[in-house]
Image 1 (cartoon, rainbow, N blue to C red):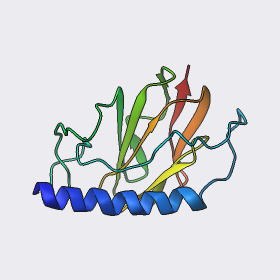
Image 2: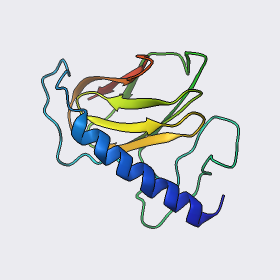
Image 3: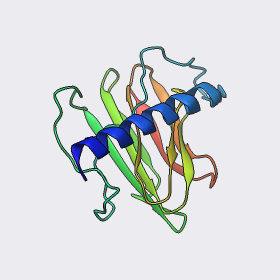
Image 4: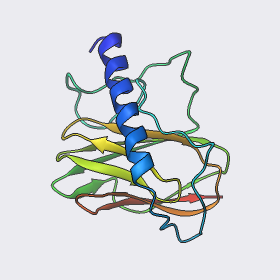
Length: 155
């Protein structure tokens, strides 16, 4: 996939993510945190996946315009099975986190408490990237299939 195609795909995903973020704030975080103005949600051309490479999958690369993430979390969903299996993932407060999910069915990714989301077209990775600036326990899930992918613990 060319850099131009990845950039166009990332831009389109970023616009969709921004639209989802504005309509997906449900305030259901058990810690009572409010949406963060510092958190950003964007698809990145450097997002990596654990799914087999295809024409639609971006490849890992370093970009001068994208800061290096401190923690990258990659999840794959196939036949309603989450890989790696659902559990807790701990990150330190202030770290830059990227969550990339590839699902075998179209869905929507949502990070509770940070009110971030991304469309997940079937077989195409979707990502959110944000600064973990709130402490607590936050569920990361899909909306359509209602799968809990993991619980993010920020300390």
